[in-house]
Image (cartoon, rainbow, N blue to C red; front, side):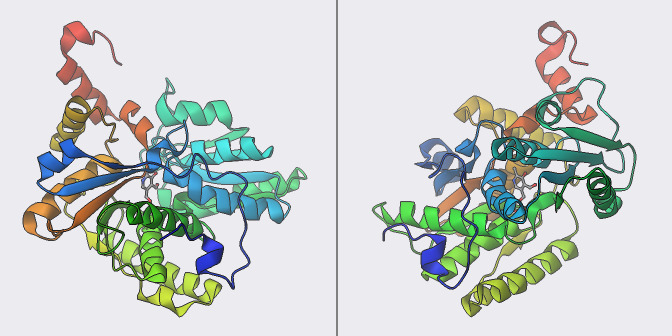
Length: 357
Ligand SMILES: Cc1ncc(COP(=O)(O)O)c(C=O)c1O
């Protein structure tokens, strides 16, 4: 099978064609060490290597969203996030690349402006044009706060385009379908071909997992796509996936999209979004030491943990090959949550880490 592009599989769709999707194709690595650890044949799709800023797969989704925004005349992208999120960095970097501005809104129930910016937040400040902070403000208000920021930009004569956190609105999912098409072509070049693999990805909004499943459906490959939840509410994610699938089928005019499914796993949630368990932070350290792989403490460590639990319970079959999609988020290892910083302090000991505070 040769690479089929989005316009090959969705010929009726008038597509935004992004100028830069990042460094694609991203590598697909057969990983002997991880395969040995898990007792299954594991390949890792290194979507984290798509850019240098930790944006990972978000950069690919964003390319479609931003291109559409520019086509509509936008000159400022407005988005929001919590301090550890990669969304603001990815949007600010994409805006810089397109020569337009980015207005970043930070809020969150327990969020405080960090005294010493680091990780994703530091990069977002360095790349963004404008930052608005709402400390200790309910995350549920984010849509209203983004609308307020956009209104401010309009009042100053700019043309804003709001990009909701998670990139779960059209046309972001085209980036995830594109990822699936790329993965299919890479698998087709392996001795066992592209059929019948287990694909495992983090599930925030579920866009990535759904896009991968749609790609499998459009190509008739019979993948089972597993989404490992990393936070949020189970009902919210399921409802979001259902709505996104219907919207994508309507916009593409392709009823095959309606057959796409995601198997959702709640086994590795830890204590919720950005709250891994201590055992998950130890796992992150273990993967770094044993395989020199950076799996951040929110998305990728939980996804790896969910895969491990699923293989043990049989929820993810060991028989075929497993593709673990590394979606990025590597800068999360620099996170400044007290839990993570305490763990580092405890792990490194006073002589190695005299002052991490
Ligand atoms: C690194 C990383 N992986 C996965 C996700 C979740 O992706 P989705 O919302 O498509 O499920 C995100 C989204 O915030 C992310 O930043």
